[in-house]
Length: 285
Image (tube, rainbow, N blue to C red):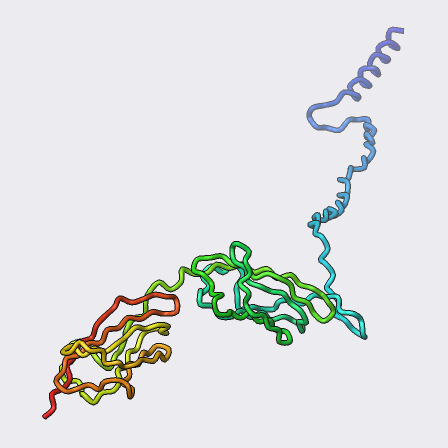
């Protein structure tokens, strides 16, 4: 019995040794069943989700009133419903330096004018009554005597024009005249000079030339020795004044002192100061 027990303990000892894990790296007497590790499916990164392009946001459009329809010209006998259009004029609207010596104003339209009542009025709304002419597509305002413009004054051209179908266009143009001419004409040339001492006694005229047109002149030739008016006459030719001996005048004589007294004015009424030109005729043998 004791022997059987020893054998049984020996078997248990041997079995216990075979099941211990050894740190020396030797294999176990009894094969250890392998541990089976199931292959885990490695997680794949998710595919990127495509991002759609942003939808463009339309910019707001400016709110603009629709343009007026273009007038349709008459055709196939249709009646003209379009008023005459002013294409150009010799007067600039709003001009502030208009010449006070303005003689006429022209207006050109895009069609024939049949009727108009254009006029020029001053600041007091007084009509200057310039003459009005119509020539096909042109309207002309022309100044009459006594209807001159005043310097530094506002004026208006006002009225209407009509075509042959009674289509009417209102015209309003305002302007202001310039300061005007404040200077008297300057004497720029003369056939006689003050202090001349050898003037031909057979001379029958003297000519004076100015820098602008002369409107009025006062001139006479005097014999200083006798204080006699020689009764010469004079003419105005634009910028020239001609002092002339006519049949009723007295001729010059040799060796005599004479004086010309003269003053003049332009159309604006600018007078010069009275002046004199003294000369002596030649002494002939």
